[in-house]
View: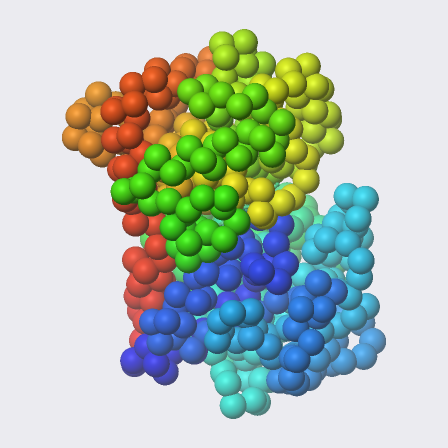
Length: 487
Ligand code: ADP
Ligand code: GLC
């Protein structure tokens, strides 16, 4: 089979630039585009959230089916992902998706009460498109599911008669499992006999993610290290047993990044563009950033950036302690993020206590995130666990070495500045092993010490800038996987 004839349905709950809460959206935008460039006939499937419908007003009808879980029909509309020729199929059912608020949560932050039915429908439509029920001219050879929101698709395909294309379940974050009470099994038209350990039952409840992991043909996750970590109790979130059992079909494929969008040489958000040969121009971005964020204009003070969801996963509690400690040693900090309200407040208070040295920006701001990546000297990422992580790759591409906990994709994408790696010109950042404030602060001090040795620092920056994080290699790996499954 040639790649030109390989048809793939890529089912996901968010895709940049239509709707985004995290890295899943970046991957769901960039990976299909890279596969499309390799000749794969790929269509992305996403819910018709209000934000998506607003941005896809020229969508055309693709198919229609009765909603199995609620009155009326579901329209599947087809549009193009903005600025690409990649096709997007939109699950349009207004009562489920066309609302004010986020994809998973209300504007005030609680989960939508009907999430089981909403993402049950997304999964159902993914399966429907793969099954014999889809009589349109386009029928996928592979159904590629992403995270719990699409996890029921492999289950439906298993139970329905007729056509069963192979399915892939990609885990972007094992901590989110789509767990609902047993009563939804019937509401979601799942056979009662599937509700058992050897099925989709999970500690007395239904887990969408477990269903996907159990019934799919291949499991992937977004870095090789995370693929190993999730088979162990510490980071297995209760699924390690099953994942270990299914390890022969489990692999890790590292994410790439969109190297067009994240390119210091052509980034329209930056006051001053630069590349490895003109690194000194990066300083102008620092000066502009300090001015914009109300930080003292000090050229030689290390400026440390944090851009992240404020959560336990991201080690935001550790970040808080480290900022508290290091600000007294003359370091500047710029944080952009949102999440846990208690921690948000603690950051804001710390910022108020150190005007000119700490800038806390609560919210989501794409433009500012680019200017921070370019203007900061280093990037802090003490994630407790990190399936892949994207910001450490963005920051390396911007010559802003990351300081990160050695876990998951952070281990796989950062070359630690050991004496050996430094001597070989390979070091691109700073890793620490123990998940403690002390270890994180020490790694940061290690980075700051090197920062004050301009020649040594420049070598790390140049090595970081030179890394290839494009999707090219990883897209090839997915293509290989698709081909082996479709064969
Ligand atoms: P996760 O998906 O677990 O949050 P990733 O590192 O994979 O982590 O992806 C996070 C993505 O969200 C990155 O593209 C990052 O730049 C972006 N991001 C996170 N918080 C913010 C914010 N407050 N403003 C702008 N972009 C953000
Ligand atoms: C999840 C993970 C993150 C990963 C992203 C994209 O949000 O937390 O590590 O980069 O998915 O795969």
